[in-house]
Every structure is written in structure tokens, then in C-alpha cells.
Picture (cartoon, rainbow, N blue to C red):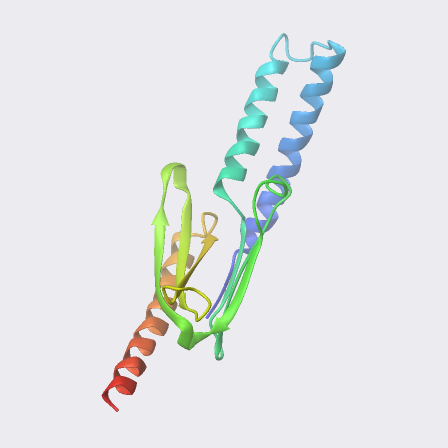
Length: 165
């Protein structure tokens, strides 16, 4: 199953650009002492800055998942507003390494996908990866959960068959 949020990507690019334009223009108006909104330029600046900070808080808006084939591919890409503060992440690994996952919901609509994969490099045997999925729709999150549940169940079944042998 493949999951991408292309519609959200296009809408968010427009929102980011418009918010940056409003923020920069309000800074210019304040600096040049031009009263375009009757002493409300500072409020416009603060409001646009809060929007940019909130979009940055939500994390990477572009999420891609590909569960077809023998590997799982996860990818987060940054947007214009979050390019400085948010880390891009891409990971692909065999399906057999996925041990469990968790979808966490935080304050103010932030959602993250935590993936636990088996790894020989880590002392505990499990490595944890986090991906921002705040911009996915509830239907996309449900489909992602179904797909990952299926992979985890197959892995548990194959692990029990190997242990019995």
C-alpha cells in the first residue's frame, strides 16, 4: 500500500508562501513606519509568526509510505516554513525487521508515528524511528495502521514458526 499526501503538499506550499509574504511585508511596514492597517501591523506580524511557528511545530508536512514489495519505505520531507528547524528523515528496511509501531497524538493536533525495528547495532535490539504524520488525513492514518498491523502480524507469525522449529 502506498500513502502520500500530495493534496496537502500543494495547499501547504501556498499557505507557507502567503504567510511568509504577510510576515515580511508587515516587518517592512513596521520598519518604514507605514501605517497600512491603522496600527495593526504589529498584530499581523505576530499572528503570521504564530502561524509559522505552529506549522513548524507540526513537523514535516510531506509524508510518503510504500509497503509494497519486500521493503518498507518511510519518508518525511520539510516544507518552506520548517526547513530550518525540522529534520528530514528517510528510512527503508526489510519488512521482517519491523517489530512494532505506535501512533502518538500530542497537544494541538500533532501526530507522530514511532516505528521499532530490530537492529544489531543497538544494545537493546530495537531501534526507534519517528515520523511526523500530522498532515495525514484520518483515512490515510487508518490505512497506514492497517498496513503496518498486517506486517507486524506476519512477522510475529514467522517468528513463532521459527522458534518452534
